[in-house]
Image 1 (cartoon, rainbow, N blue to C red):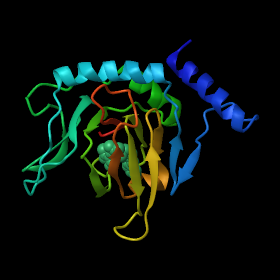
Image 2 (image 1 turned 180 degrees about the vertical axis):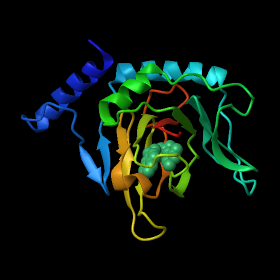
Image 3 (image 1 turned 90 degrees about the vertical axis):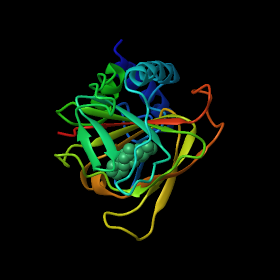
Length: 225
Ligand code: MD3
Ligand code: FE
């Protein structure tokens, strides 16, 4: 059985308990156009993904991006794919090389399977951002608009400790809504939701045993170019 079929089967079984008629992979929750697939990634696959990411980080070490103003971000990052996201005193951008000067490693096939399962896109992502949050890390409200084709979705995979995800609006300010993301949850940002402001307020340290030292990893798969 392929990973995709396995996820769909496991997910369908879980969904059937709630709604007997639904057999396909359907989102559990839609907030402000953002779709959340709760626990889509089975725990075995989560563990395998963490192993994949250990290899990614071994060849493309995590770094703390610096803003153009010289502030270090609290989240540590790296990427896989033909391009990766970097930020330094020169600004932020996608580029073909890790700050070390080496090319980024390949996107783990298991991550691509998740994209195929939920994205609804004909394309494959060319960039997989890997964000690592320790207990104190956060990410302020922002938009993702550095990608060339904003009609392509973004797919996020949460691994490890739970995180409070905040959703705002297409413009700055206004009301927000929050949702806790748990290990194995997959979020799809497509259509109008693609340009919504969003961020991570805080973790719930110790809420998952997936990562031996705790913390949270978020993968975001994107078509950057
Ligand atoms: C909503 N990461 O890397 S993932 C990011 O959990 C980022 O690390 C957060 O925001 C994290 O840019 C949130 C979920 C996510 C990703 C992209 C989005 C939500 C989004 C793009 C548009 C709207
Ligand atoms: Fe973002």
